[in-house]
Image (cartoon, rainbow, N blue to C red; front, side):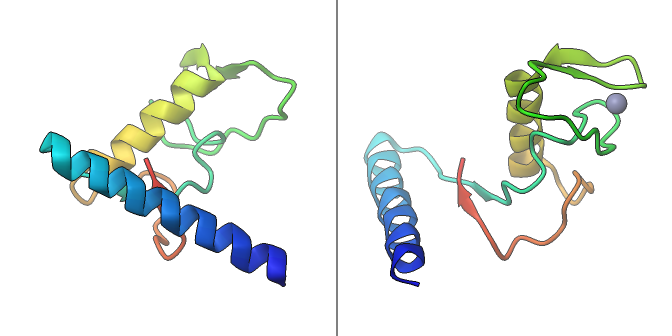
Length: 97
Ligand SMILES: [Zn+2]
């Protein structure tokens, strides 16, 4: 239980630091739900489960990307979409993007 509270405090501190630096730079910080970002196809938004050993995101819709690029695109879509369902809808667990 202590580890969890330390973990939560570390994320909260990171978000605080990022918000501080962003404010100084005149930028905004957008928080997104990180769950499923590496498992969601950025092109068709379906869940494509893969292991950490799979370096590529290959979806049946034809989308093939580096898995990190695909995850980054999902984070971007979640941060800047306007109501479109990008995988998960629960935003109760948010982290800085
Ligand atoms: Zn797809």
